[in-house]
Amino acid sequence: MEIKVGVLALQGAFREHINAVRKCGVYAKEIKLPEQITCMDGLIIPGGESTTINKLLKKYGFKTYLDNFYKKGKPIFGTCAGLIVLSNDIKGEKAGLGYIDITVERNAYGRQIDSFEESVNLNLNYNLNGKNFNAVFIRAPRILKVGGNVKILGKLNGNIIMARENNILVSVFHPELEDDTRVHQYFIEMIKELKKKGD
Image (tube, rainbow, N blue to C red; front, side, top):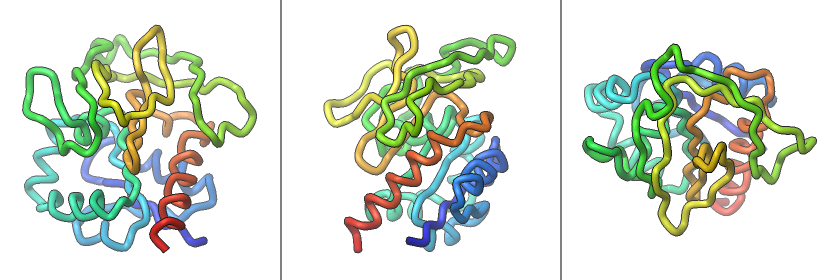
């Protein structure tokens, strides 16, 4: 089964995501124009600055294309700022795209100098060898609340750090900054599953 993954390349760590997807043996493409999304099987919205990403999405007319992609049930993976963009509710601000029923708080783990790494246990069906994942947190958001259909895939000190609702996957950390590709492999398996259902 041929899989094509697009990585939103307006801002943020999109090159690292592309490298991670390619390490999994899957085609990856930088997405700079909204119409490029249509032929993709999955989409990654990387970390960066969520306010800037939202402004660029609006400026270049991405929303209609993203809405169609989401409504078709195609998987979307948001990391850090990408999670904020996909969220249903942002504390003290306007809502995000509303694709996943979570309430988030921006920069809840502190500033850039407060960045840290932590070995975490993730509940992934495709966790190939059962080892913990070394998660990198950079100005990470916090998931404050999740809806009833949201599946929690990982926690750290009681805080949710990874979650999924149907075709939407989010993480507060940056899996693309590690050589470990298990999180990206999980996303690719999501694409395969949902693509089979659509065929």
